[in-house]
Amino acid sequence: MEVVIVQDARAGGELVAQGIADLLRRKPDALLGVATGSTPLPVYEALAARVRAGKADVSRARIAQLDEYVGLPAGHPESYRSVVLREVVEPLGLSPDAFMGPDGSADDVRAACEAYEKALAAAGGVDLQLLGIGTDGHIGFNEPCSSLASRTRIKTLTEQTRADNARFFDGDVEQVPHHVVTQGIGTILEARHLVLLATGEGKAEAVAATVEGPVAAVCPASALQLHPHATVVVDEAAASKL
Ligand code: GLP
Image (cartoon, rainbow, N blue to C red; front, side):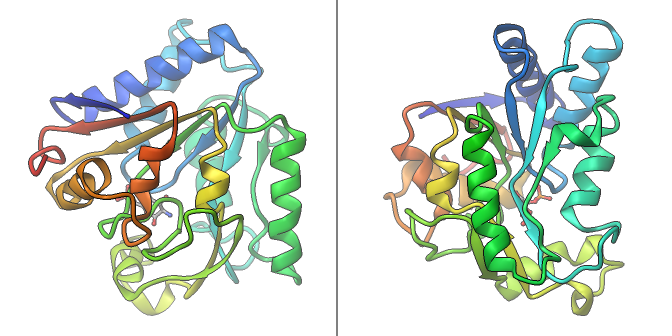
């Protein structure tokens, strides 16, 4: 595991965006796994700026979603499908056809999870998976004590994660769904390169457990220690407990 400490969130965004641009130079149709939340926004902004400046070519890139809420109506602005389309696919000038994600509003969500696993494999697997981290060490929506071998499946959110995510639902925790679908930790570990980005003091404990703690399901992100090509990019605040 490689740990890179940058000064702040902006520098982290620039570094990761450059890594994505370099990957696309080597493999123009790379499948990019993207994360939601506030942390990766500087990455998407820096990448879009490179595209506008003619310094990155994303025209053949493909985008894969990490996780999704269950039960939000199609087109809900906070469904992760809507979020990824708004924050990644559209600013990069990509077609929605370049995007794939699990269907959290399917009648049979379990079948939708299996279908998503198959779709990822059929697409050749994820080349670079960008990850954020929850304050409890979750990646995707794999809450603490998720199996390290887990596949895409339904999960129940902890109250801490629902409270953390209430800010996207008018601050009202009651509006945050209880259930989600997420790529499993085993699924995530199959990506060729994992890049976890964490910024701010609130992530410092989770980052310390990820990088220096034992590999343990109680901190799902610690599974990155098992991956042959994992990069953890943290700003000074998130690195403060290392
Ligand atoms: C959600 C997402 C995760 C994300 C986490 C942290 O739970 N499912 O993929 O990493 O939030 O979000 P933020 O970056 O806003 O702190």
